Length: 504
Image (cartoon, one colour):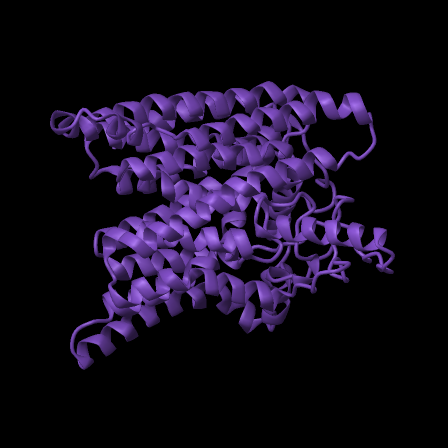
């Protein structure tokens, strides 16, 4: 634990340096939730509309905000004032909320320690660096502003319990997670199948007893979270806030997933058919305007509904579910859960680019298993981090995000080079062939060329686009980032699927 605490301490020092950096509207969202939960009775939490930033996280996170509001009110009462505190960003509020995110990352520290503590020393330290020094987490949580480290810490705790064979504890921790942020529900099918087949096994009586035990434990978590709102007749309002399907298929900045290609194909087909003389009705909601909408956004291709995206996610996840059903093994559970979140990211409804953290963080542990996994993680983590760059659009943060990604890439390269040497030294004694050396490279030629292409994308957005177009087509650089990063994300999804089908 001391080793992990050292990595966490270094990360905390960096987070303190980032306190005065840019913060998004999410800063005001969470400040408002502090005020809302401390000022209003519980029955009004999910119906209050005094601010555009309505509460749309599950109840356990609302309780967490209520807990944070106690020290906040002592430091500066305006922070938790529902009326006077609107858009309040005084230095006291800024410092408190930044420090609260860093302090909540203690849960991430605990989860990282539990998952990595059984690894050999070098790989353990490498895992701590990837988990606790993640540049994507620093960008999203400690500049842009959110509490993903806290939530991902709960996920890592759940996975650590499952990896140890403590299935009941793992199920309870996962229930706590989805009662804190419902977007983690994407992993529920894997958890359900795995617990059903791995924990609820044995004779009929034993299996039934275990099924009732895990069902009762998970049900108790949901009852504690949602019970008070059911009592006050607020459940429908809570569900309406948690699942606002009217937000549309895509976020304002397209997450780099499958739907990017679908949208672009629709645009190309509309353009070509219009040139050929066909009458193409313009969609009512525009993607390229940076807005979202759910009213007929496609001109040529079939419209996409939440039900279609749900079916696609389950279909993409099905090989993993079949594997978990037929041969449930704790050594594969982290890979299976990470793949499930990858499927949700690639094919889900209204996916945020920040959701890539849901699978890149667990895959940092998987990367310690083999050279192939390390090579995959090297490419994925760089692409995932770069796809978050548009979140920090102000000039003063530009050197920060470049430096964070550069340091992370160098650490990965050095770490995986040492990892490769230690894992292949015995193979070199048996074979000095050129093919063996090429196979053991950290990343192949295609991967290197793809990553170098990121420089071209960045060069276009920062220099060439302003030079050629000025202020015109402002969404084009963002679209290029989404499309190019979506290629890497699609590769990652296909690579993970291949590994699961062949080896798990």
